[in-house]
Length: 521
Image 1 (tube, rainbow, N blue to C red):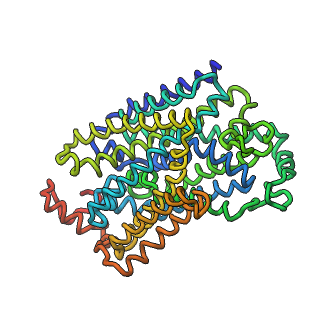
Image 2 (cartoon, rainbow, N blue to C red):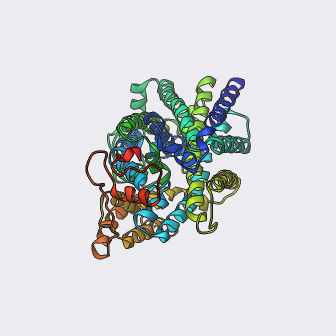
């Protein structure tokens, strides 16, 4: 017990120390929100990966989809690595970095507002983010409950409060730089932890070969396929594809993920970050879902609901309950790392969006740099406290609405934003009406399916919403007037951008040189 507690206390001390060390980078709005847009590839890649994979993945999704799909659940991790990480960096990374720099946009709603010249779109996007990120933030705590029950005689409430307080301290102190530096350290823990856990669970079942043999003998309800859980595509290929789409394509439209491209250094850093992020995803996501694929070997030990269905959140903790104490301590720190990295990213996104896109210029007409920073720091505290309160209420009650809402948050956010972001980066033929249509369909489809499940599970609804967003934007833009915008900057030495130069010249920028390369401006 003392060894495990010592590991957690040391972990908390390190992350708070990072917050104190990086506080000098958070003296301006740009520094607090984006780290001055000068973050290196390793920090950016690990920040992307740790924000991507939280305790929800390791405890909830790995247990649920591993139980349903068996070893084929590893395809979800492969899809996350190839589509959710590699292609996202290759396709979106350079363009997002360039366009947000040209537009001087620090948040996704600000990008929509400036790209499509619409204050209404900016406010609507901010409202959607606020509504759907808060429940998702609350869900981050849930993966900890059963692990702490298994590993410690510590109340869940104490765990939630401690995690909330520590996260709040380092984000308020150091802003974006504190989150990315801690994400790097936490990512190292996640890499080491997932490799050790997979090896230990396989050893606990007689080794990899024996574990596969045992799993192949487990029958699957509704499937006549022999050895369905060890087959390449599992017992339910259509739903497996839907999960891959939701969890992989979703990163292309989630504000807390896309923001990592705003802040990275220009030049080769994006290409380097793509490789690092992809390898991280292969190990963490692939390892988590592969681990969950052996969950049925513990069918006689896990918890079951009164109707006889497995409690999916209990599967992975049960698999880990027989591991050595030192390894259990590493797993707890792993899940804490995954949870705190995602939590910090979500609350920083929420506070910056609410301050810069809803309050500034709308509620508070004149907001100085210092006042903006104060608002964002204050809202970080508010959002952390609110998410912790929601998590505690949900844990102690029979309320299911919050759990349902957090389940559709990825579908609603990416379903609303994916098309407008993607086409807005690469096409100058996008109309304002098409963006409104995407917002309406993305949110309406996922929320409507929650009320009346006409598409079945929220996973299928979310996947359909994302694909619909990509199709709706160009189709609606064909019959509605486009918002004129020069997507590609003029060619030439230094990638000279006429719009940016004109704005600098009009503002009377000091020492303005009309022939200087853009990077020097």
